[in-house]
Length: 72
Image (cartoon, one colour):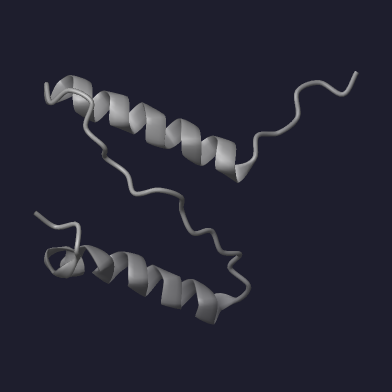
């Protein structure tokens, strides 16, 4: 047989979001609170310049959280 097919990125992201939401809600006693925004953005890193731009975005994105419309 062919065995189990490899999971898709969507499956992995769904599992990760589910597990982290369960952990956060359970450990903070906050009930069923939404933790993640819908969907996600995937991107194939094609070269070093692309990698560096993505790295910079990830590295500085948290600093912009207070300006986000979801910030409370």
